[in-house]
Amino acid sequence: MTLNYQPNPLNTFDLRELKHCPPHFAAVDFNLSTSEKKISDWIWENLHGRFYFGDVYVRVASNNDKERRTQLQKRAAFEIHGEASYFAMCLPELNKF
Image (cartoon, rainbow, N blue to C red; front, side, top):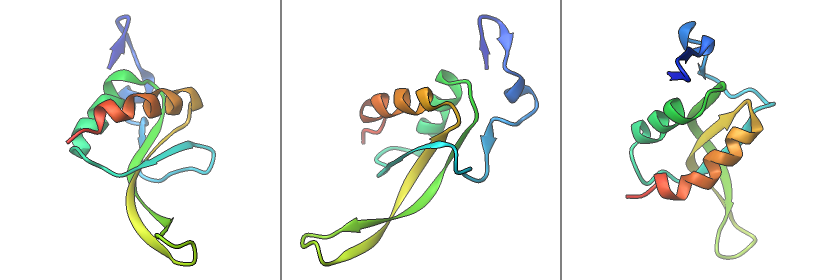
């Protein structure tokens, strides 16, 4: 919650985690292999901007290109696009069974 002993105002006023995903947030979609709590705790501890973490339905191509199906995935979206890049780089290490 604190970085260099300075409180984050977004944490103080409970404005950091959003219940909806705004269109200007940079999104990272992935299949969840670990617990949601592990991912959200990592976001709370290592990043400082506003974020969204929840479910999203994604259209995925099947074996042949003619068929497409809908799949439920997790989405982590960040207001600060650099945080989305950092999260995406750390995700393979975090999202282990």
